[in-house]
Length: 271
Figure (cartoon, rainbow, N blue to C red):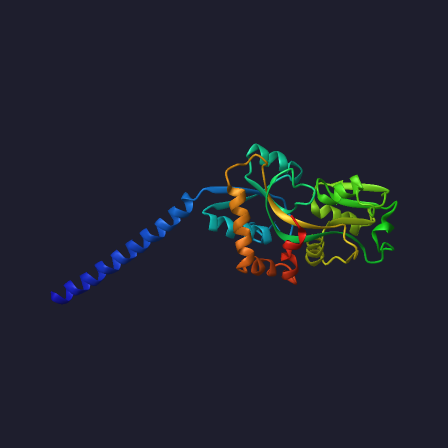
């Protein structure tokens, strides 16, 4: 009888341990659910934001945002948006911020910014057998860009004296289309972030040549609505800087890009 009591006692302790563990896990999940949600808008732009094999958002910006907002006490919900409507969406409050390899250059007065947290080059790519080697060679040529991006405004406005007059500027709604147009010879060149072009070549075994002369060196930031006075932007800016200083950003960027140190030289941008 004594032996049975001992066994019963052991079983009771085990049940209590499992129950308490379950309660602890439930409490942890509840705390996570209770965190306020930040809705981050982006489009498909590897290696910064794209869907993995399980259909989940991943990439440089997704990982940076998840870590930064976690430190700030938020959950982040990454949603795919129509990139052409990004300003409208953030100003209406449908999304809280825009983060998708978003160039700050020329847009400093349009949004409230956190960053820059990464340096990026806007460049021109051509097919390997092209006779285009410098920006001036684009005179009279056809070039593809993603609509509402910085390369589009560079070639439309031509405020940089290095930018020649094109034959045609083709603005397309999706990133992948500009490379399809280039690969099939529908255009002579395409312009985008260097990282995007390199990633596309890796993903689709494409062979493009990137011109050595860049269109622009720009900082990448997180954009909030101009009238967003919640303080989240300022907190995000501080958190991203802390992540750069403690090595977190370098570790994340290094998972996706070679020579990650060069992308973190944001102090030289002068913003």
